[in-house]
Image (tube, each protein chain N blue to C red):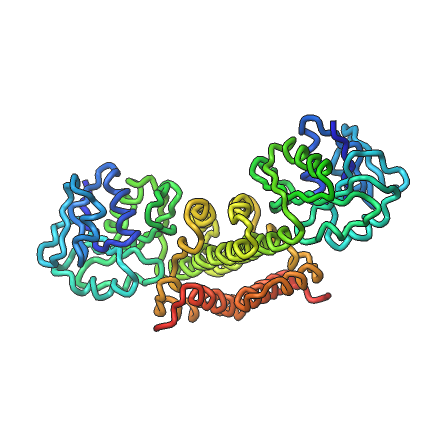
Length: 258
Length: 258
């Protein structure tokens, strides 16, 4: 049985708590938040897990999971009132060394987007793991396996570019969906018309590289359509992004000629 | 029984031929291409459908489907050696009126990305239909229904912004996947680590609007991570796109403060 304390009360903390609660051989001993109500409201009255907002009453555990914002990790790790314990943060961008060296430092980074009220399939989430010793690493592996999740050993130097790549593939992509939704909305078109296209675009690259999968007017060097689109775009931000993304595609495929 | 002639031999022409071949009450009578081998190589020896490269021997049909590049539609439609027939193009961007008015003009636009060797689920593809008369529109509806595909009546004025939105949601999104793959590659990281995240990002917006689904450092106004990412990006195109997309997210959520 691995015993956990989860610190934080955001989306990642809540998703991980929900998953670990159902996992075999894992016990979430305690939840910490500066505001206890962040957890008590989420848990409901029937919950038996203890919630604390008091540093000095943190329970003993095999692992303290800092599922808090990047900005809070360093300070939180320094404030922990014990030494020699295993403390992992869940950030893609922060190095292992951001944690206080008074405890055994580790990283337990789930490479996925966590939204409120949206359940996740953990068997599909790669967990990127890092620790200072082999036994600590193995404990993290056991944790990921308890969620049926695949895990990978990544150094901080590898995890940071992976997180950056994830920003392109997830955050920026989602923003393009939003711009597409705006265009639909301003012409009274239902955005759901685009859902099958969006899913096919995402699924296609499991079998074809995105380099090969590229289609569209920029890839075809179809200047007539590119000009027609530029003309349609009234919003300056949309127009500029259209141009920058088009230029980047033309550059990628070394298309210079009209 | 609806009889078709398909003109063109690109991905859309081939996908539609393959789909119609199996559809009930549809007969593809003939395939036209300037180079007959484009089709004959695709069809193989056992095929019984006739292929022609000769304008003057086009078969009679209920519908002539111009599945060719946008640039070729207008000229091809003017060259057709008959009048009064139903002729539909498959372009998202071109208006109905691009076709010659010597024939009955129509649009049969499948809103999907068509790649070679990748089968599609037609029940998931919205077909955007437009015609000059109600009987012609109904024939297009029957065709889409024969593929078990949902169909929508869209004017040229609606279809063009939808196509533009699709460029954001599909072509530009795929390019972001490519940039993410480049970042992975330059750090010896397997791109497939991002596949579950990419699929979840695409599926999530079926239940949450992309506006609500937005996560990441720009959305959180996490300037520390934004600066760390900028520093990591060595490629100038990647760096500029990172900045432009970040600025657009900040603007969307009216985030001004540091």
